[in-house]
Image 1 (spheres, rainbow, N blue to C red):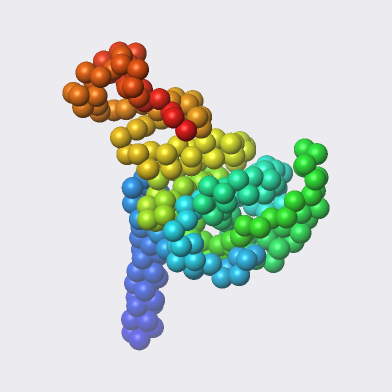
Image 2 (tube, helix red, strand yellow; image 1 turned 45 degrees about the vertical axis):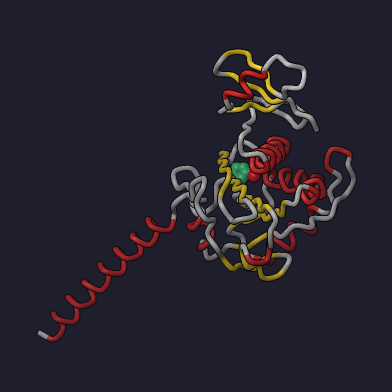
Length: 246
Ligand code: BEZ
């Protein structure tokens, strides 16, 4: 009799445990969408303990997740980021790279990468943190585990987060396709410009220096189009541009 009660209790406990684990995974493995507060976390990295976002002040933050240390595509991405790290810094953007590998692997991989002369640009120091998420906590908070594609590892995710800690852009790439760092930088610059002047947006293939587009124009500005002092011009009533006067 006692054995029966014990087995029943054990069975019920196991069912409750499995259900709560399932609920936790469901709740946590959600992609933070554009406009929401970027989830906070604390994790270890090659630059010491990271308290996100508190450690990053009023900078823009770009979080990159990657599948695995010592893999070819990931290695090329980290090197490419390292060659661009100063230009991100001059755009007031802090880079963080994260995978589910343990910290000791991150240190060995970083040391090995720093000896490589990639595309004839010489050896480069990696000055941004490689974050270890071996508990999967951050990966779940940011929806980085896409289990149909990548079991137990992160997919290639990118989150651009503004100085107010709001998610401003989300990218996901499959394991087979390396990210385009120039495109991420272009997006960051476009986000910064449209944040500074919230009446402009950027057209397809926009690059720094190109003209902006304007979703709404006042009647007075519209009446002034065609005059030499007007910053605006139109290709149609629904396609208004603003000259880039930088
Ligand atoms: C890579 O980074 O090379 C890679 C990572 C996971 C699966 C396939 C390739």
